[in-house]
Length: 384
Image 1 (cartoon, rainbow, N blue to C red):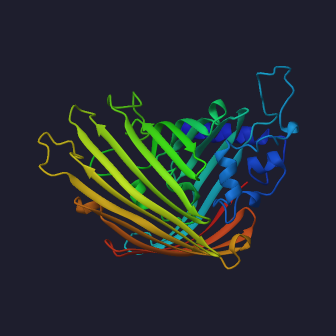
Image 2: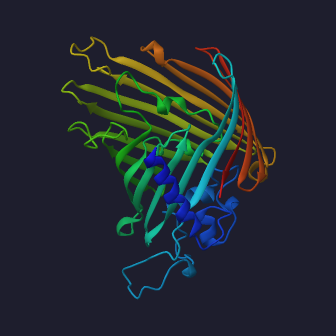
Image 3: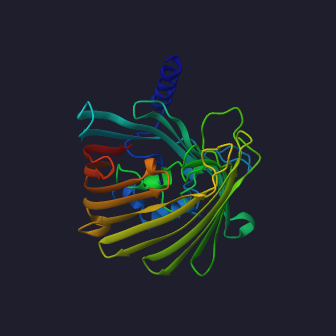
């Protein structure tokens, strides 16, 4: 309790001493531009926003001099004001089959974010969950990126990030319902496509082909005495190809080993994905297949590997494309495993309305087949 109170007071003091008005997020404040330059239906990104993030949160050769202090040191770049932004999500939810059917989940998420340049082509990004589902979750994204190494198209990222980021970014989805296959744990295995620690190498070819290589610990981001529980490192390689404008195909492979208590689990994953955008309709789809040798770390290794497969399909509709205030969406999730207890089929439909540029109202319904749960959610998502 004392730790929670201290954290809230620290953040409150930081916010009170900010010199600029903080009615819009940090990057928009820095460049004196609207959030909708990078986003539509925030947090969903426009192409410019994706390019801005890929360039290390900077506009090459067009950085505003007013944003940086004069230090008299050519080797030092300091922002005049430390960039901070806050994201809040507040929901009311009805769900059958639980004791409290009507639940005011407000706030569901309170997140403080910061990012910017340490030097030209060197940037950082971090966010801290002040509250996630009523608990203090701590740091999730926290990394430093080096862009265009040696004048090439090679980028290097070091730190803590989501393994699935080169596929689809969970943090940028419109739905409250998750991309379930990314977050699914198999038995006692800690290797997922959620958060992990390591390095990422990204390279773009002139053929509009994007390559990504991740070298990660493979055991998530739980609090432990050592960040890695064994001597192994896991690898993921991703290739994404723009076939034509608004049509992209991708594939990935993941290989790793876990041996936390001298009992080994060898695993591998492979998958494919696509994005198609046509006028005011966007389709995103992901398929993942996974095989685990011994995910429960049994003394006697199972004779057959445990196989899991699944994915999601997401359809987004906007009447006036990126200029729309209204968005409709549908998300189908599928997880099918030889561990029957993690099987998951869900159907989600929702409507999003941008009340203001950085205030979005949602209404969402999900049906989960295995448990026959119906879930109705209404809420507000805002960042400032």
